[in-house]
Image (cartoon, rainbow, N blue to C red; front, side):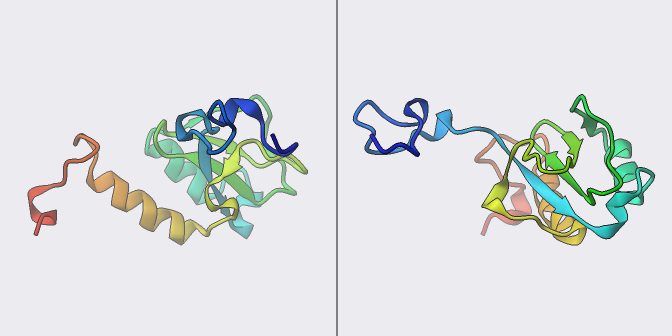
Length: 121
């Protein structure tokens, strides 16, 4: 087993990762406005029923936030701490997050493989 591979995340032969064992991920959203705890985007998260889900407070020096859209949770960034693995291993902008969120919001209430009638061709 390679040193960089934790055994929990792999099958018995350590030949392939098991997706259900990989840590949950969140979007990492970065924007200069997020240095302000009263930023409009934080208000948008609260107004859309996202819950702050981290025991640490806001750091003015960290203009980023981790967001889990599945569970509607968010955590302010912390200096030098990767609170949760960011999806794609990179930050996205607020506009990019909103595009992604709006796609998933379209399917709210539907089963995982179900689409709204107007999406099926």
